[in-house]
Length: 90
Figure 1 (cartoon, helix red, strand yellow):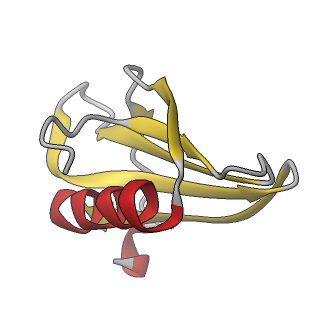
Figure 2 (cartoon, rainbow, N blue to C red; figure 1 turned 180 degrees about the vertical axis):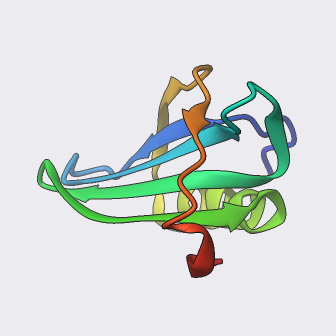
């Protein structure tokens, strides 16, 4: 199991499905310590974008890497600006 969870990109074996997890920051620059932004792309077409908890991100990363053979293809260090329009999604 992965233990050092950070914002990252996961790519399916076929390369068709890519899931990105980004840290989230507020307009004052404060990093949210509970939420991550999850972006799902299929064949380079964005399918969804929503906030998830860090705990859910950790579970999903382990499921995708160890259950479905996804690979970690990038580490994201740039926090994304919090969008209150997406906030009701979590």
